[in-house]
Image 1 (cartoon, rainbow, N blue to C red):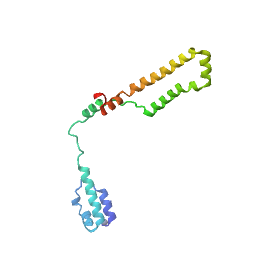
Image 2: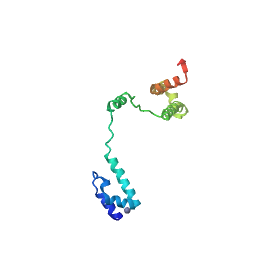
Image 3: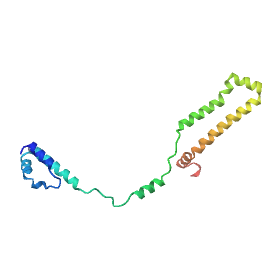
Image 4: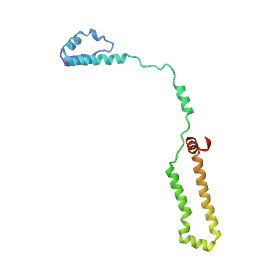
Length: 153
Ligand SMILES: [Zn+2]
């Protein structure tokens, strides 16, 4: 038997066949190191195929589902830089109008009929911004207070 025949016979072997009874194969494997290595690999593969799949001793699905249900819902987080940009834009909206020529023209001609609505709109925008910012950062602020032991916590 040569190496080619050995490989061909090894391929045609039934997995239920006992390799030790294949005397022609074993004889060649004793003379040829390459084929001996191939035979050993084949035997290891067969051994792995015969091992029954690992079975879980317990059903984990209930434990996993309980953990999933107990997890806090993920919250949509807006990066702090977006809040800062929005605050900066709001600040510019409050500071820039007095620098504009039209502002002085309108304030001079309309007086409080122009200034009061403008102040109300800007004040409402700043109030809304602060309300939403504080409302969405309560947990962060609370954690900060706890971490730095502020206010006796
Ligand atoms: Zn060989």
